[in-house]
Length: 441
Image (cartoon, rainbow, N blue to C red; front, side, top):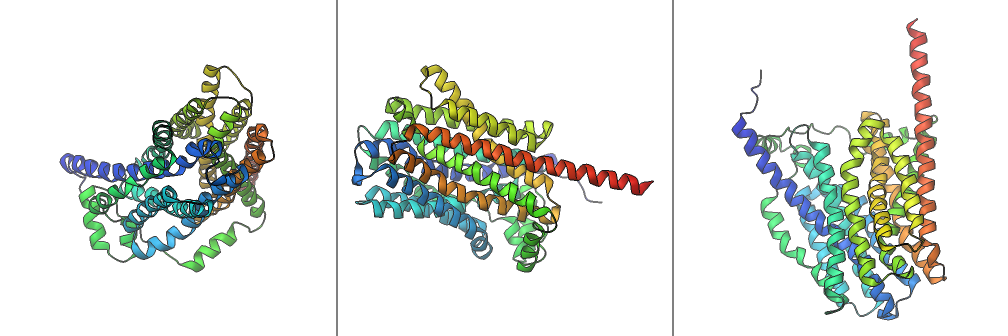
């Protein structure tokens, strides 16, 4: 019979686990800063015609970063399996920091676009790795709460990006904002020194004694060894399309596509579209702060609401409310009313997509869960690439006032698809229950 951990060991383990979560939170904070900084400086770049930048080119540049994130997210798992989660996190911080230096030094759209693409690769690789790290070291029974707290860092980075732009663009220039995004280079050595290696990686590499020692030190459980290889992963993917499952799978994928189109489209173009609606630059950047404050609140509220009412219902409702909020932003209203709308749009928008992942996770079998969620996220990333491009095309064609409407339609489409998927799943569950009841009698 194993003995329970002593109060002293538990307290010490909690403090050390807090260190891991804190380091990952700071890394994701810098991730969010680098992601949102482009949207924060974009109105200035367009007004001053920096590099001769046009609206459609600006949309392309926004898509470069999200395309880089797609690449980074897809290759992160493979690279992490080779070099370890810790080294990958440090490498990602170094990559997107140096890439921001490329943007700060850029003398053409081409060089600037290269910098944003490289930054996207680092940004895309860091977030899933950080989630894996905090999951390994979260105190027992606190994994979901810790991941929710970690995700608030991304929106805190968005808030920071707006203040960096407000404080530096007028007195110093837009390049200074990207030099600030180089500063996380100073954090990389701290991360390398203090962050322990991922327990999952150590177990996967057969270093169980090292993993056990770390687990005892941090008062966490040693993850179970993964079974199977690439063949099982492809089998799990094929299972998503067996029978009528392909309908459900495609519904989740399309909902995720629309959700991330909405998230990254609004994140990139919010300040510029608000400027187009007649607000001053300072006010437009204040909307970024309020929007991301809403995102932080939303991340903390959505999980509790989903636990009580069901993730599919909350996801569909959240997307409907997001669409309403985004559409209202196309109307020039009183500043106070607009701020309230922006806040609640941030609350619902930034957690609606997360609820899609929660829905897929809940509806999937344990053996297929990681594959189902991973591919739903991956397909959604194509929407993340399209969103910034779409906003640029609308502005370039003189239809910037329709940008919010287009993003609202994306939100409604996600609401419809996730709603249909949830309804089909409920009907299937009811049918299975009836069959079991008949068989029992």
